[in-house]
Image (tube, rainbow, N blue to C red; front, top):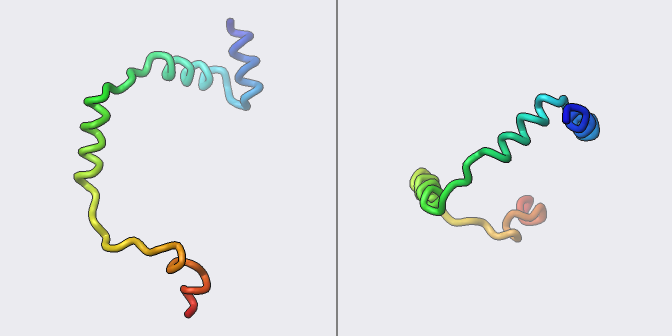
Length: 67
């Protein structure tokens, strides 16, 4: 098993311990529930701030900026 990890690490340009840690994290990291995701989104939106009107692509174009 160690030789497989070493070979994959070499192919990806990283060291074996980093590769093994990333694989374990992906495998065992808990997947958030829908409720946890929705709670996170509500928190994210609660700290947002309305900054006014968004400019159109035309208004942000180089030609329009130097008029």
